[in-house]
Each structure stands twice: as structure tokens, then as C-alpha cells.
Amino acid sequence: MNLLSSVDADLKTYQLFIELSQPVSITIGLLGRFTFPAGRYIYTGSAKRGLEARIRRHLSSKKKKHWHIDYLLAHKNTQITEVKRFSEPECLINQQISGDIIVPGFGASDCKKRCGSHLKYLHTL
Image 1 (cartoon, one colour):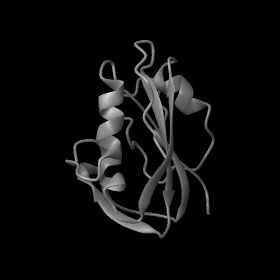
Image 2 (tube, rainbow, N blue to C red):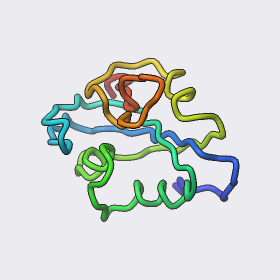
Image 3 (cartoon, rainbow, N blue to C red):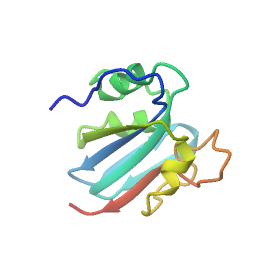
């Protein structure tokens, strides 16, 4: 499945649809150690420029752990199943998703809307 799309200058927000086949315990930078239940998640992120490069970086099997999501995506039990792109602001898109927050502050270090987390746990597989 090709998860990359053509480049559109108006697109600045993306969502990664993620599946964990097994529970995953990882240490995420300074946030600490967390256990993620197996199941489906949605991560909402943004890029002021270079959206497709950011998505390619997330899809790469070889990545540096720079952002919170990199720690989860680097785990062998993690798979990205879909990528969506939006022109609306990151927090607006994130707030439209209801789900459980496993890690408070995940991906929301520069969040001005106080979303709580930009990774939502939807349900088990």
C-alpha cells in the first residue's frame, strides 16, 4: 500500500492510523516509561513545511527518535495502516477524535489548545 500522496502546498496536518499487534512498553524521552495496549491509535501531527518529508520519515524503518511518535513507531509491534492529510490546523483535527489518552502530553509539547495528547487510543483489534 502506498501511504504517500502527491504534494499539496495547502496541506499542513496529517494523521497516522497505527495498529499495535501486541502491548508495547517503551520509554519516551523525558515523558517516562509507558505501556500501550494492543489496538488502534490515531496520531495527529503537523509540519509548517515539508509535510511529505515528515510523513516519509515516520514511514521509514530507519529513524532517529526525535519526536514522541518516533519512539512508538520504532517498535517492531507497530504498524502504520493509513495516512490522512488536512489543510486545517493540527489541534482542530485532533480535537475531532475521541479516544483514550495513554500518555498525557504526547506530541503536544507545542500545543496551544491544550489538547492533552495528540495520540488517541481508539480500541482493541
